[in-house]
Image (tube, rainbow, N blue to C red; front, side):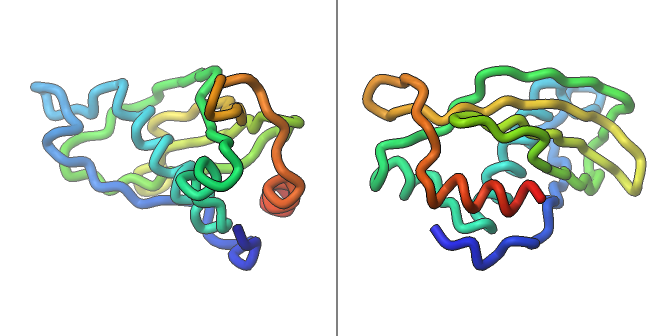
Length: 141
């Protein structure tokens, strides 16, 4: 892990494909969770946090504990979406993310997702390592 990329963009562009939509060509509601997951993962990767390496080296993994979503407007086939991610709160073993999906400056969906750090072997809560906490603290500011 390396905090060299602190300050990197907090967003991910996602194109809506046919597989993302229902029969009406509207993004299926559950797919917003996938969009948010991808955005968090890529945002962490840009910070130098590779989740596969974290699991292998430290035996720590991230799991979603809580989700709150608010749907505002539908996204449709071929739309180019921008998913924004930010840390709203950082606990000893959890991160509360604020995320939103935008299309051309228009808010489509917003949510708060709590992700917890757990030990891979038993899924019990585990505090962030000093290095990981430092990276996340810098990214929060």
